[in-house]
Length: 403
Length: 185
Image 1 (cartoon, rainbow over the protein chains, first blue to last red):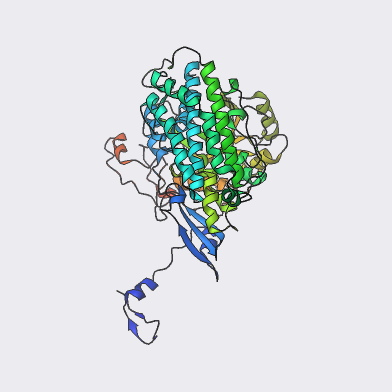
Image 2: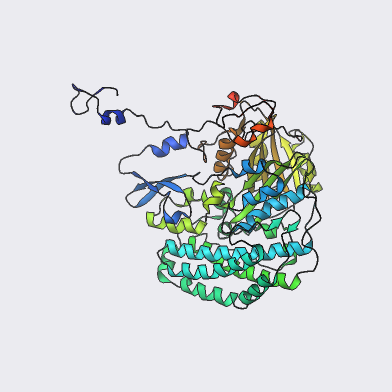
């Protein structure tokens, strides 16, 4: 223990633990921005939101710089759920890589496997049979409804209302059980295969789906009435956390959050994949760009998804659900990029093959990761209590953010 | 590949491209040197002829020989059906440096931080370039090809098990013939 002069009496040599703590220098700032953020002026204060806070939807830590109740600046700290999924995929073969991507956004897992599967199919110059493509769209849209239903519940929960969450879970549970009947798993489905899907639609799934479809729209509308005209909900979401069109594009936001700012960018329409060109659907947009708009967009999307499921069921062709591919695949060297519209935005996979049975490089572009950045622009100036509403409206899933 | 887009790219950037415009499926690919990044990206973003306002993806690639930074762009509203892939080629593996594009897309900030964290590529002009996933005192760059997972030591016979966290800077990384090198460039 080193001896230092006491702070109370400079003539006295002491070796107290306090002296020891005083001697530890703060960690040197690693960037300009970090130095600026951690230089706290008079009247300002740093507090931690998370990593164990229920409204962070996972394990996210946000260091808030506050003045009274007002947020001045923030520094999100990521990485608590980092699994190194890209490294794992590089060390697995192509079939194994798909199941590593499942838990990224664990409430919309089907989308998470769809992008890598599509990228690998591009590397192989392979196209899935048409029935498999319809099944993919059908199950994905179901998954989207489940994900958006849960979003509504979470948003309400973060604003202090428990009831909508319970209804949301009723809705989601029906879909999840339905998909479990089809895929054998409730959350991490691992259903899509390179060249098709694992198993044709079965009777259990179809009867559950028919049952649900007969009342889906009515149920969705009933759930919406819980929140849409709720005075407290309106007061706490309208005009809050506004992102304008240009800012949203420069932030790289995608998905419902971008469409709520008036940009009609939807990968299903802009860059059609699978059988989306054959389906009729609208891309709902709104101009306000606030939390309420981001909520309403998702409601509209649920209706569009139900509409698409209906069309899929009517147009579904007969035929095989798997293309004939060898068990061990070695795509010829090349690069492929496949993007899809996940419930949170554009989710993409960039895969490079070097001719072996393992991807040479596989990058996953997650929409939550990019959308979450908007926090830094939107939150300053708002109250701490509104942080929850704004963050929930961006709908980040930390499994995807941290990869 | 979109032939019309390829022609326009070729006409505009012919002297800056490292290779002729290529493409496969619905992707058009151009290669530029790191020093051209700000100019080329600004033209692609601002020029009404192109209008690539959506940054669809930004990532790094370690080919085992050089480092690359890969951008995927998209126009809004759509003028082509293709993704535009811009590959910044030939970054030195020992000291990879690339100009930042945060002046065009603020959203590139975190993606560049991620690329720095995983590959050690320094983006000049990014105000917040620090690790994003790994802890602040971590010293390696996990997605580089000379970073082995523990199980992976068997790739090179007689190479032995390496400690996973090994290098303080890219330059200090162990040169080894067991690095998996790309058979593509």
